[in-house]
Length: 469
Ligand code: SF4
Image 1 (spheres, rainbow, N blue to C red):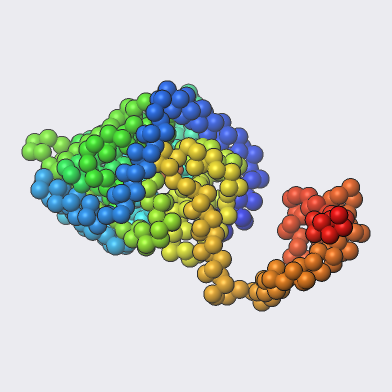
Image 2 (cartoon, rainbow, N blue to C red):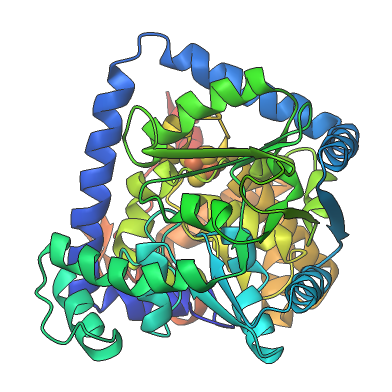
């Protein structure tokens, strides 16, 4: 991830990496083509999307009610619910539970919520080792890297790079080839020992059903099933927006998610568990409900759509900006179009992620594929407005403020507007060739001509033409 850098600087660096762009293009196009094919099989796909959108919208309107219902259902079935206001509270809760279980290691299912709160580092500070068990997450962990895609965290690496990494870091994998089956086998051998030795498993959640207290994790490799069934203690960290009211709603989501994410009709592994069952699976279940800025997002009637996301990653795979920059340039756990609307809000509209609403061409491809109908371009424009309004209240550079005030005066008077047009025409005349300004404009205006042609002002404005008729 780009750390404290803003998107434009981080993106510029990423654009210089041609290997990264090739890796991304191959991977995103493969997944997007698969998605398009399986979505086309369903005649009533649009109706299904609308059902998903309606479920999310209705749930967010009464989120408090559904969360309390979820807490009751989980508690009634032998689980324990913990509320975490922020990352620090969530991390402290998980570390305490691991200590109470007498464990020094945990096995983890891929989980964006735990990436968001930096759980692995927090556990390491407590002397607890977290083993990622999703193949892509394991690659990221072994490389001391950070994820760059919601679904395929190591999408920025090709198999030759992964084979070299395994040879360097996995015991007994010194001679492994870059064939997918060989890489999977090397990872399987390494992970099997971790699964069998772990007393605590940590997972995220794709959905949690308020009506029954059922938690759902979908995945492709079966590692999640191992993490949620083998250890004695299971700890699930879940963003509060993942709750849905009923099992019927889960039925809708489980049709939308696999088609949109992996391009499959259903996920190879869909794990559902409800509290604790005597002598079957973990004998202690803890559900950590994470806020970490979500309640503030909920307060924004337009921005709250970002909480409807089911993390399918379809919007990343069609985004022309993501395809060229990759996920690290976004500097957050949530990259791509969803990251551009979610990350700044989770960070309270402060810091480098406020540059993300501009990390978009507003082409609308993301909204077209979103399985829960999030109007991503609409939210991007709304957030741009919030960032600009915030800046206007605070520390705007004097030059920019004076420029904006001058523009406001010009645009508020027809006489001044027409005078400005005449001035622009006179000023552009020496720079214009064949209807275009071919030279770079000077000073702060240079941004307009840095990467595109600027049309020269016309010889006659519409008003002048109209008057002369
Ligand atoms: S915003 Fe929509 S398309 Fe993007 S990850 Fe979320 S659910 Fe999927």
